[in-house]
Length: 190
Image (cartoon, rainbow, N blue to C red; front, side, top):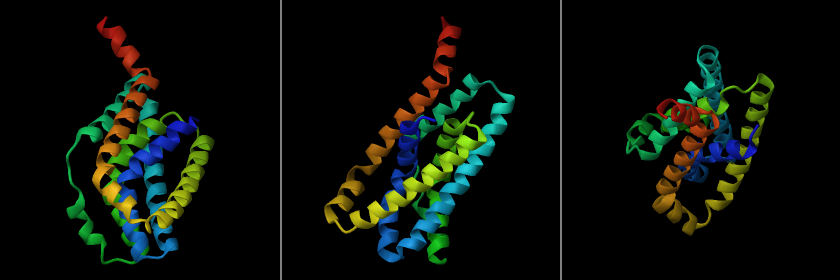
């Protein structure tokens, strides 16, 4: 497993949600936010792994490398998901965090996690779940502390979108390259 890619992937697909987590940590307890976030993340990881394994059974790896275009799409899209969040604001804190995470992150997480988890064995996937769980605890703890610093909140609000787009772009290019997709396409057009 490429730990750097896993860490970058985790940060990239969750970066936009970190700002929302800062607000949730102001409103709800640490444990409620952590549990809702972990449940949402693990649900999307399991779905991504299952879909990726199904696709890998039927298609060669280089073709599936074309899924690297999904993070590239996310790097350039302009969609706004804020309107969908209102329906989750009246639930219990855990369900509010879980529901908001699924609304905000499901599309990008699935499109990024499927190509990244593609071809992993079951034990490596379980290790990935544990690693992402560990990263989640670290991030929520960090954000809980960070949320008390006003200048950080202003920075994320002003520059977080740009940083997220650059990260999606890097992941998309990596998936296209690492899967052999770019090499295969290059051979076809030469």
